[in-house]
Length: 324
Length: 264
Image 1 (cartoon, each protein chain N blue to C red):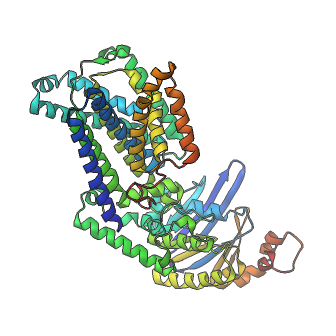
Image 2: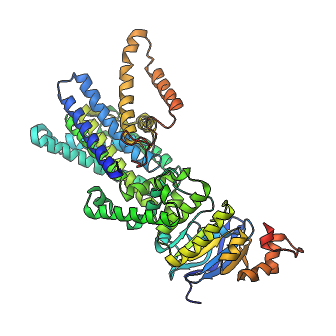
Image 3: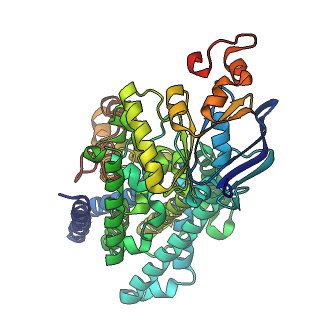
């Protein structure tokens, strides 16, 4: 099958898969399983968005939880403050409120991404990793010290919304964007920048502009994931968005295979479920071996599949000719 | 000579105390095929870096196609029509051969919004890019390789792919950095003939860095000899070959036998 046909098929499969998950979650799942499914959705969106920067554009971002936090707090503040009326009304107004907070989260996190990316992406090399690492910490510490947003106590009373339809709908939309991007000239140019930035520039490809664009889109998606997370939990605190969260997302992308969208989704699901699956072990042994096994699983995977689960390929294109 | 298509005036490029280019001036006329030679470290690649905006000279002016190049970023210079290849091949190794060339057609690409929305105009644009890329690959005898991974090609074909990719940018001035390096004699002969025909077909001016003296002597209408960042000689290949300063740069002082051709 030719390229565009294949990526269209992939898009259909993705949207279908997400819809099926959303429908499954809508059925009477036990609350624990339902909340786990939603968490998978949020983590999948985070991993897919980071994959756009780390895998496709070849830049290294270590502060993705920072963008998630910007989105989450934007949504929390709007949902508990100015838009509280909409959420309290339920029904259609609640959905409209959710659309507003998710949109605002995308805008604010996207703007933060643009501001961080513009100066650091002009440079070649590891500057982005350093700057985003600092950005993530700045956001966390700023939130910790802002009483208006709850400070260390966290932000309480976020209206509950963002169920499976929202979570997997938005995830599907972003995946669709990534798949379609792979077939465009701009998507190819991003891959060219990943492969060799100097060569790409010498061929008339505006590398900085493309990198900032991809980074902004990625940050916006992370912000949306933050908004979903906030509305699902009803409570957020700066601790949820620390460096460990950023690393967790990086591990998902690396484990899935840098540049592989389906790999990121797969790894996000796996790494969300693995600690949960290992929970009964604690009852058996009396010792919490979860983190030990979790690390062991990662080490083994990296030993036997150093390119990640999918390498640069996709479920629908194992050889990975087409990129994102 | 017609108005120069490329001119370098009194350019100095320093790295700390080392002058990679020292008060260098040169011009190229439209349609010319000129060569830059000189011993290792003479500043040949530095000259290309200055011409393509990768290195910023401390002094001097560079103009191309009647425009000053100061302050332009590399992609803007490429868009203007000054395009280079690299001495140490810089292909997009993990992309297909076809995508390497398509990436270089970026400037004429449909907009992201149009492509994402799958507008017919975007589909037409994509098709045009694909056809154009395949045509260029065909011109460099790489048509059969289009779907292969660029990094898996043999060395000589990678060099050819770099040229195909550079042509995709629509250059008016093509800067080739040792295109024949590592090629065997028959590949090198093929390249010579190809460069001649490409030049007339695409209306190119070509500036060539090359250590293969046979190729330089046969192909270039004019040679510029650099040593320690300075131009030490310039002229028709036969004159340059006999120039005592050139012999000295290649062979050291006092020796008078041979020439750059034998120096290799």
